[in-house]
Image 1 (cartoon, rainbow, N blue to C red):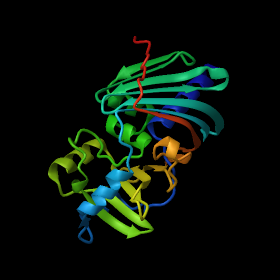
Image 2: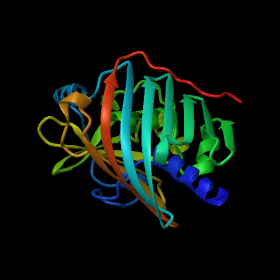
Image 3: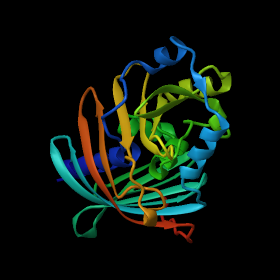
Image 4: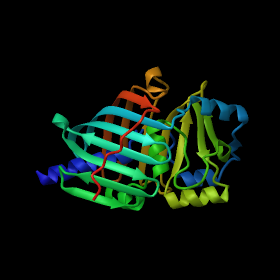
Length: 273
């Protein structure tokens, strides 16, 4: 039973820290693609305006969702509550059947705390601790942006300026990547261990898909939002198809958003240890 419980917590961790879906972009090595090849086009003012208008503008957000997960050869169902005071704190609770909490996580830009009474697990440390736990590199900016459908620079690269992105391809939408020629930004990307790509749907230029993967291509995470945006969810879709893959396992998730509360007073209860 305890082994099963630990597996549940690992699934929750992966679910929380690497929500993704494996379809779409070209899977070539990102660094090679960016540093070699055709000259990349910068982003004009009109495009920047469209992107910003399509993003959620918030100071705090709460997202409640149900999920069905297939991982490690087993199927799991979770209910997730995500709370975020922008650029400050993230709080996540995942519950299994009968409302039993499988795990609770609270994070700031420089610390992560995780507890599971179900599996008798308590973990605390910086973001490298969680990277070791779940096997994927992640940081506060990335997690916050994935849940709120926003373009981001991983790590601590200062202000997230769209002027620092380039158009890396056009077709069924516009593919954006951070400009690798900017030294400070390049150093941050190298430190983070991965490069993000963002696919924007034509027209409103709403973010449709986010992909992150390392230079060696040993793992890949995508987060598919699709073109749909539900009004009561402030630009988030009702359903998100999710998966993650690496050399050892595949993870698939069907995530259904049930409720979104914007700019309300939020509580971040946590049993500190």
